[in-house]
Length: 293
Image (cartoon, rainbow, N blue to C red; front, side, top):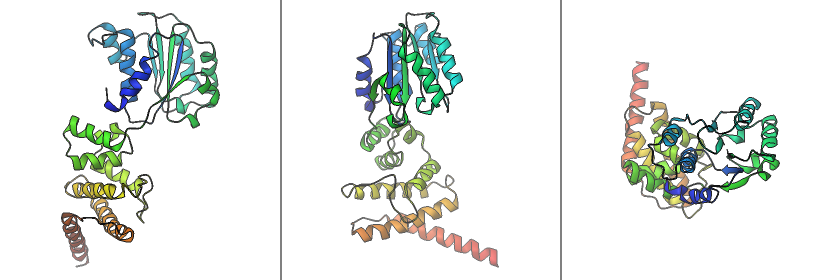
């Protein structure tokens, strides 16, 4: 299991054997919750998690007859009706049925009210697991029917260590990815240069006001250095960013210099980026000159 979920694994293990049970897991997307729940459910049906028995194989394939996963962009009344029909029958291959609603935050009011009726008097052999991104977006009556497990967002340092250890990213790139992913390791793992650029577009406005990154004075220097490293890395990728995106990166970099000078931060600027800036600007001038000839 992912290192940042070890504590959450222990929290879940406390509820093994408890039935009926309704768990409300609170976490942001992209931290590996689906994998955590799959492994925990596997341990209920196969304590050894052997990966060879029919329980393990069916869980991995998503075909276990006693497990229902609802994972839709908007959990509707029809989805809840499917849940109600599922829990109304006895288990087929075990003594426990498990319902996992992976996007319970998206439930409509009607769907929430419908699932509430089931949670008020749950069948004795059913375990409900609902994942939400925020308690503020969840009906208080729904929260009151569940045992709540809050899962902390992994720190950039945890994500960085994981990227280096598991995927052999250089520390510089791992650090930049960990910051730009905003606490989502699964996003950081798969984030390519263009996706990183898109995230940076959301994180920085044209005046270089750090919106989502929100650095404190203590870690501003480290974040600037990481962004600088990422810009350098991105500019070196020949075909992964459009010329327009590269120009925007250069403009950000120039504003980054101005921004840090205003704060009187001592930053060692990357000369390769400055040369790349000059190279692209000359290339753009040449193209403009060629079109006007």
